[in-house]
Length: 403
Image (cartoon, rainbow, N blue to C red; front, side, top):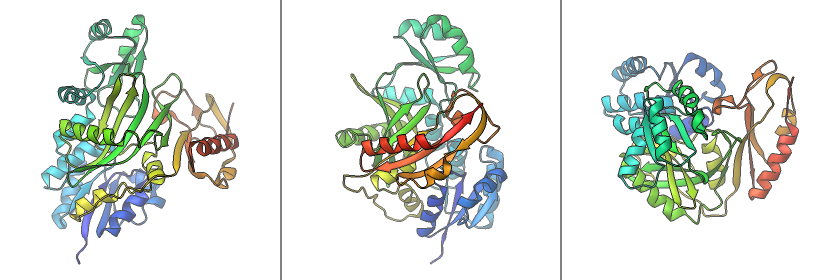
């Protein structure tokens, strides 16, 4: 039987190795495209790709010319990306070459937090009050109209870049200027601050049906909106399972999503569940890894099966499951003098994986967004207590010495 051709655009480093393997198991030859630097950096993870292609997927002209040349020589059967910065450009190519994917307008809506908010409100979903602010005067008006504190955020950023909590009226002008630095739209989003338990739902639209893989509880670094960790499953996941499925169906219908991964953020509050952001990708921060370990699931094969035209029903294992968590390292600010304890982490039974982002001589600053974190570790256990004990032991081992 002739093998089909899948072009994977961009390298999601925490799960690219499994993605290539699973796609090949379904009968795809896998072409993989990314920058020369990324192909070299992750060479050890992408050995099984049938072809590696240098391109800049954030540049629509470069991506189009490369894909067209490949497609003209031998037609592609599928084109897909797990990378947020590639979603819109890839969706335009999927449409241009009549390949399966979400319409570009839907992808663009999910990338624009203001457009997402409007559709969620129109559909009657419980979400924060919001306003589009083109000037500092607009922020003052929003402050006056709604409860305090408020949140300012760029319309189309990820990783908590530019997200600011405004607690005092006198801070509005400075916060508006800082947030605006990170927004290319010349307008930012103001939202009411939501107090509650923050979770994310990892799901997929597969053959027209919504399937939920898992629900992850989030933790934040104090005084920031940057995640310090995630744990799966959320302890009340089973209790709310039916609610989550109905909710995701409403979100999918409201936004117009027809295919692929879903990462839906939200808050359990004393006034009900509030929908946060909606993404046509899976969560970052190793959420795919901890969800697959905790829930004994495969989050990629349903996507590749539909791209290949193969009937597939995601399997959801019965509870009880393992508990799995990712935690991000905390360090003091300064220059890294030494990193100790990595060899000890390798021998710890509950530690699944870990990575340190810094090296000796690097400068460590304050954590303002997800890219400022010094590293991470993943641990698993029979229950949440065992996971927390393992995390505490692991954090005792690793030492990033700052001077």
